[in-house]
Structure formats: structure tokens, C-alpha cells
Length: 323
Image 1 (spheres, helix red, strand yellow):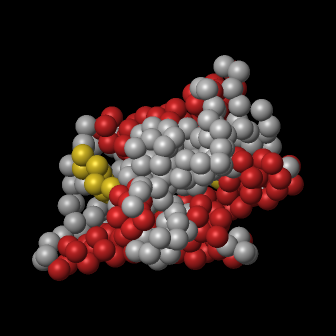
Image 2 (cartoon, one colour):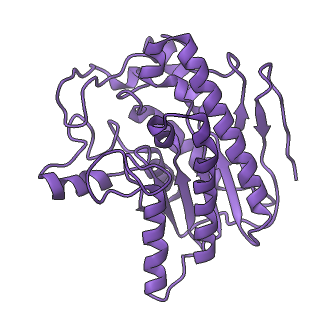
Image 3 (spheres, helix red, strand yellow):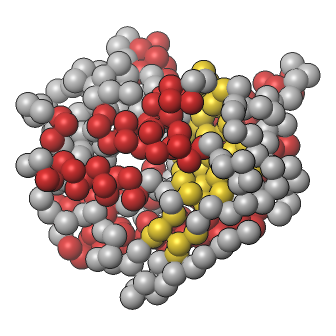
């Protein structure tokens, strides 16, 4: 087992590399996803259409995604050649609440409960050959007044969901860490101080979530937990966009989720941000490619695989400089 730690100048960096442990599957029957708008492939769109008569987000959002194209987990599933069963809902916090404000929209915990309760009611267990994808946390911090106080309960929710799915029969997990919140449109507009705080919060959450998942592994016999850090991939994609003359600070779409009160850019591929918080499809595609590669272990690799996790201190790996 390898577990490498590197401390940055801020004393908060953590590098965890692939850690062979236990046994893992190189092929999966399907991906079962839980998460928020970064993974929602039309669930909120369908739910809101049934309640208010039209789907949200609407055009120029693409086919109910919170972006201008397929989201990362869709690209991941396509690359792996497996079907995707998607329980992710835009606006979902890791608990039972949802920021969208439409009755009945679940949080991630609600979606996991519905999934496991449905299995139990049918006398079934979770598909042990599937890959269970979990990505959430940002909405907890967007909603919290005391953001640092939200770190521990958000981590507890996510680790509890891994344990809950494991108890239902799941064995392979892919947990994605949080993108650096310093790179949202609001954080960039608020200036360097706000970006520094958002970056430090992101590092604290990702570091502690990774550590918690590492600890959880020992109690889940026969399970594989893969932790994926999206930030190196996002940084590389951003740098390519900037090199092509694009921007990391200006959104392609400046309006709202109902397609009004905004302007649309001419070329989304030259933008990191689709709207205030969501990446453009080109970044989703890069993430999906990286996720698919990270999901398939080398023959000897299993257990808790901390893939590409290299969180640097302020100014070291930060994406959030103005462009």
C-alpha cells in the first residue's frame, strides 16, 4: 500500500496516490450515480416539467443538463462501455434537502434512501458488479452560513452513504472530490481574499473527505473505494482554454436556469464556466475521460485508490486567477 503525504507552504496540501489494497473489478456491469447538478443528466428537468409545466434548466442549457453538453459521468460511462443509472439531482445537498426549491426534489441522502429502500422492498440487493458513483458537497457550502462548520457533517453524509450502499450489496465505489470553489464566478468577482477563503475551504473538505474514506475502507470487507480529485484535470483543461485565447473568469451564459435575463457567448469551448458555477461541456468531457481511466485499475490495484489527488496550498495549484 502506498499513502504519500506532501505538505504545501500553507501546511494543508495532501497528495495521495494509487493504493493497492484488497480486490477490484476492471469491468463493471453499469454505473449507478448519485450527486448534484455536476452529474444530473435531466432528472431535475423532468421533475420540474411535471410540477411547473416546463423543464428547468431550459435552453440554452443542453437537454436538461446544467451545462451545454453531456456531464462527466455520462462521458465516463460511454468510455467504459456501460449503462448509466442516474440518481443525481441538480441542487442536491448531501443530506435530504435540495436548493432548487421545487417540492419533492431530493438531496443525495434522500436519493440513496429511495434506492436502498426500493431494493429492500423488492427483496433484492444492489448489483455487486456495478460501480457506484458519488459526487457532492458544493451545495452544502453554498447553502451554509458557517461554511467551515459544514465540513464535518457533509463528510459524514458522504461516508455514511458509501456505508449504506455497501450494506445494500454495493462493493465498488467511485467518490469524486469537490472542485475548487475559488473558481466560481462569484468568488472570482469578489476578489483575491474571497478566492483564498474558498480555496482553503475546498482543500480542507477534500483532504478530510479523503482521509475519512481511507479510514472507512478498513471496515468494509471486500470493497473498493476510488477517490478522484477533479482539480488537476480542470486545471489542465483551463490552461488549454487560456492558451487558445479563452477565459476562466467570464461565463458563457450569464442568465438564469429558465433561459432568460442573460447573454450567450459565441464559442462555449473558449470558456471554463458555462454559468456562475458549472463548467462547460469541454471540461465535463475532459473529466469524464479522466474518470473512466481512473475507474479501471491495473491488475494488482484495488482497495482505496486515491487517484490523481494532489491538493496544493494557496497559489500552488490554484485555478482561480483572472483571465
